[in-house]
Length: 252
Image (cartoon, rainbow, N blue to C red):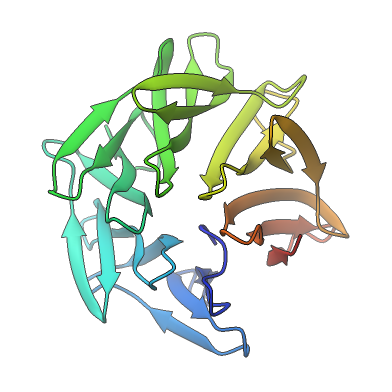
């Protein structure tokens, strides 16, 4: 669940059915689930929902190629980074600017990735933070500030903030893996961190006014904060001691 619940309390996420197929869903504040999949998809990963209810994400087609998608007013639009083997859309702001990453492997399940933004006019701009060998972009807030993550030549993963062409690295203190997964109009950044490069154990964090706060839902052995809305409500997922995966919503 990315972006955090919308003003009406609706969240977006994924679930796996008994045949191990992955689908998207929305969950309203009243507890109503609605499943959805782009036409022709074999797997769906919604990554972000705007306050207006526009959903962006990625899906796999029958050939196993990953494409970005926009779901707006019940209509799907496919988005592909020009020349890339695979594409993922990860975020969108209220103006219609989007974030994502291009993939060297069609499924986006492995291989090198590079971050990109899409302007309101549909212009793609690919980029990597300084020192990156691979990167992703997670979200863009209404002010145009982009957050994401990159991996350096030594295998350490860092979060980053890109604002007006200037990069700032985001590292949870002492970590060897920091993933900035979302931001909001107030400038809060959320994500996950680990003290190992391979990120076998993840914990959630909130970065507010330069101060990091670590948190995990009760009973979690692993957690990942994925989105935060303007009110500071955080959505994400966690794994319990039995290995079951759950979504969570954390209120301020």
